[in-house]
Length: 136
Image (tube, rainbow, N blue to C red; front, side):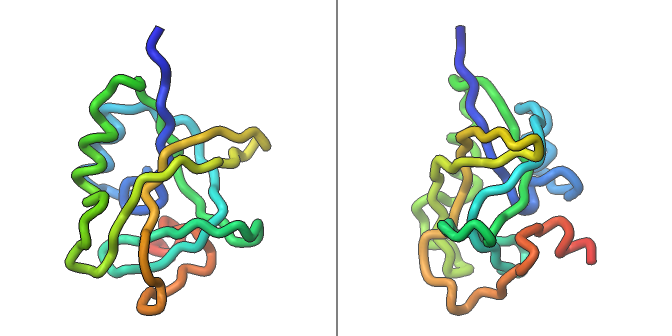
C-alpha cells in the first residue's frame, strides 16, 4: 500500500486564490482541512513568506493537502518554489516538515515551504492569514 504525503500551503496556493499552480495542486492532491503552524508570515508583494517560530501565539493559517507518497508533486513544487535558489526577491525557500494543528485539535506532519534568510526588509502579516489579509 502506498503511503500518503501531507502538504501545508499558506500563500497563493491556498483555496480562494485563482492561481494556476493552486489549480494544479487541486487537480493532483486532495484538500484535507485548514490548519495552522507556529510561525511568522510576511508580505513580499506578489506572495508571502513564512518562517518558523516556537512561540505559540504566532500562527500561520493555511490549507492542508494530501497526495500519494510516490507522486512527483513535491519535486514539481520544489522547482516552482525555487527551493535552494536565491530568488530575485531576495528570498530562499526550503521545504521543511512541520507539525500542523487542525481545527478539531488533532495534529499531523506536513511539508511546508519556509523562508530561509533575513526578514528585516519584509512586511509582517500580523494575522498570519494571507487569504484574509489579501481579502481586506
